[in-house]
Image (spheres, rainbow, N blue to C red):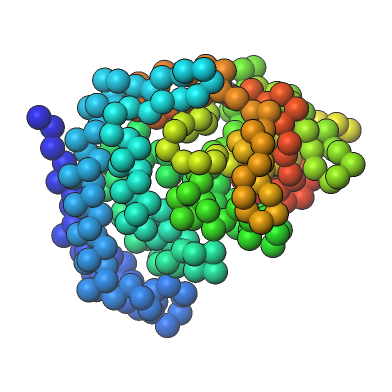
Length: 288
């Protein structure tokens, strides 16, 4: 049976002897808390999680894959319990902004933990991994209202996030994308289009999924200069943070990616879904 042994000692050497993170304790926020004892405890705990919880599910995820049932994705056996273990352990908020409930530890320490988790089970780790990318985009481009509404439940792991770029007719050439964002009288937008190869686009691990979607506002410039970025929740979110109605976004099909069958790679359909501009108009790629 395959096993995984996390290179904890190597990581300690890199952090303390090569990168010498102790030098930054008084210079960069978060590094003061990253004492050798704290780092050792975090790496040991991450190793235990990766070796004992995530790695045994790697083969299960590859063998079972995800299933699309009545528009909902069912993840492989054990994935829901593993995700809850990640949430309960505070791993989703390890490097998150303390203002929104995160622990504020150094990004480089988060990378070490992510390496362990991904080495043990890449398909599983992509669920919280995509969320991290969405969190960063909202931190950089979001208004105070958007940050206060979306970041706490994403950092806690209560909600997850995605990044929606690719479309059926264009892969890396995003200047050709056609997904449309039509402005509404309430300041929001209606998003219409199809995205493909969307990792973690639909699943049963969290109560809400916050999609970040690249789309065009009609009348904008051609090519990449006309692309904007939008927040499109799976379930609409009330101002108090409670969940409302299901948004007009759905998974139309699951796609196969070799080696990560346990991650839901989705065709996502946006049928006039409610969306909110993230950052400035026509500068979506820069924000993402």
